[in-house]
Length: 519
Image 1 (spheres, rainbow, N blue to C red):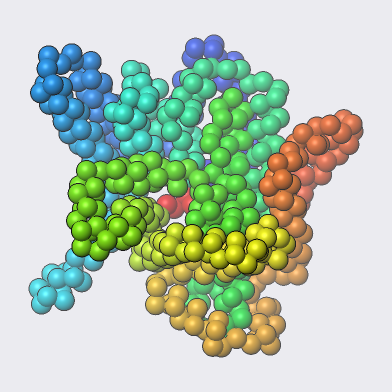
Image 2: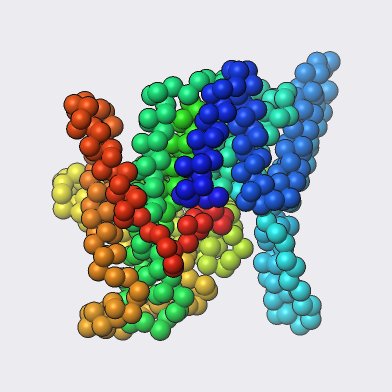
């Protein structure tokens, strides 16, 4: 039951809305909890037990931390011991949650890596792969569980005393499969409030769902077959075809993930629950760093708050930075701590996506790019000021867009390939074996029909227009809402029938597959 299936938005979601509305206000959160368990069981069956285990670990950890916090310390020594105990229990809770994730998803990856490393030292040990069934959303709800425990430890949120309410937070059906990674403080007030389904929330939610389905089913799913054809064939195509596939892959990933997130946010909005935004026109970014402030926002902020800052302000890092200063000077010392923290963020980002070498390369790719940007930021700003270059001019903005698009396309191509070696070979072909004639001759072999290209082309124009308006802070819903009622109904019905008529259905199209549901 994927978010773009008829089962979800035409059957499951309406039933939950009706049951939710019929229920008394104080019990409505229970309807959402049962809906979450139903959704989870439908997708992963008995693997729901892993989620429940994570709930128990998270609840127990927060309970112990909170209990220790309430103990009145007699002196500074006792207060220090209590702080240490809280940190220890927090560490245990974090390790146990991540241990479930690591065992299920990364056992074979690390086992093969250790086996290969030992082989270089002449030690013969072969790792035998173990097959694990992995529940949906484990990477997402694990990060939510960890953020909740840390926030309870920091005192930024109060411990949830009702374990079933905590379970709802970790199994909320709209977010369980693809996020966004919501903090407990973001949604707890509205999630448990039991607010009725208002006309405003219902219409706003379904408008958002409709827009998400347009991006996912009309654009991304029409691209999918062509992208799969090129990347499954590895490096056999001409460089021109590979470049085309890389561009198509980038747009498909964006439309697939952003579209699904819109369905998720719209579904939650119906119940009056406002989830954090996950995208903000990423291709309008100024550079790679800004791109990641706009793409998968909740993942980026999670890494910033729970990895980057803790490492940056850790006492061992301060001591190490001081030693670096004594050896290499102040300039290197200033860059040392943020660079180490940035490295940890991006190696974690790569590993978070899955047990695959290409994902780790993807993380290191952006680490290097953002490190270079940070290194050159001040010299470039100084130079542009000296040359009196207008950074808001059309020429500069166009250059930034082209540069960023190239960076992102290369990154997504390396993300999509099976191995890093294949990715580099494909990249090499783009620069050494590029023939437009080969591209024209291969188009007919890529499964996509002229009908598909037309839908993709006009769909991307619509997305581009909407993105430009959003970047200019112009609300399309408000603009349409100000039109006469007949005109509004024509627009919304036209949008509904566009998805129905031009959405990708039938043989060859997988209505289940959502690209980020695998992470």
